[in-house]
Image 1 (cartoon, helix red, strand yellow):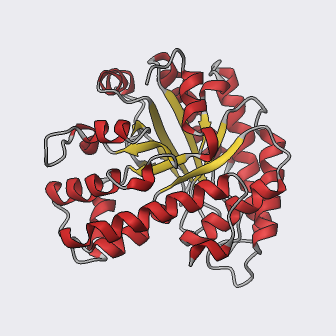
Image 2 (cartoon, one colour):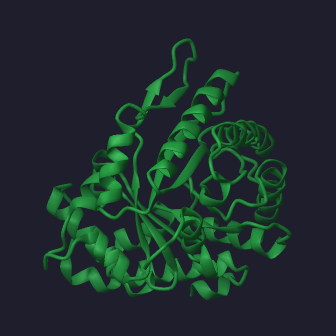
Length: 337
C-alpha cells in the first residue's frame, strides 16, 4: 500500500466502516488480562496471543489499523514473519502507542498529565522507519469533586497538540485520545460538560500548532453516565448526547472519529456506535478503536491454549464484523446470535 500523504492514510483507516484494533496494552496491563485467564505474561505468550489475533480472518475488510505496543512492533511470528507484516497482509496498517504514561499534576489532587514529549521526535523517526503509519497518545481525565480542573485539561490538551504536530512532521497520522473516564457516579450531563471542555481546548491546541486536521483521527470517549451511577442513560440518549457534543467542537474536515470503548461491554460499545450512525447528520466517519470490546471474547475463548486458537479467532472476527456494521448503521442485536 502506497500513500502520498497523511490525509490519505487517515482516510484509509476508517474507509468503508473499518475501524481500529487497539492492541497496545502495556506489559503490566496485558499481564492483568492474562491473569484473568490464568496465563503467565511472558514475551512469548504475548507474542502468541497477538499473532493469533492478527491472523484472524475477520481482520480483513473490518480492521483498517492496529495500534501496537513497542514490543509488538518489533516482534516476529513463530514462522519469522514480522507481526507488523501480518497486519499489512490483512489489509490494515500498523500504528504505535507513543506516550509514556501518566504523572500526577502538582497542586491537582486526583489528576494526571500524560508524559513522553522528551525524546518523542527520535522515537517517531525510528517507528516510521519500521513501517508505523500512525501513532496514538492518550490523555486521561477524571470526573469528581471539583475536577476536571482547567489546569488538568489545559496541560493534557497542550501535550496532545505538541505530540500531534511532531507525529505529522514525521509523516505519521496522530490519533489524539482525550479520554474522560467512565469511573465514578457522575451523570451523563457531567460527562457531556467535561468532554465538551476537553474537545474545545484540544482543537484550539491543534489549530494553534497548525496541525493538519485532515490528517488526524480523534479517539474520544462516548458521553455516558458514570459506571457507578445507578441511573444509566439508555442507548439513544448516549448516542444523541455524544453526537451533540462532537458537532459543537469537532471540525467537519476531520476524516474520522474512532471511539474508545472505555470499559463498556462489547455489546454496549457496538450498540452505541450503531445508534449514532443510524442518527447520522455528520461529515466525519464514526467508527471504533476498541481494545477490550474487541478482544475480550477472544481472550476468554483462547485461555492460553493453542487448540483454542480457531475459536478465539472466530470470536474476534465476529466482533470486528459487528462493529464494522455498527460503523455503517447496519447492526442489529439479532446478529449477535
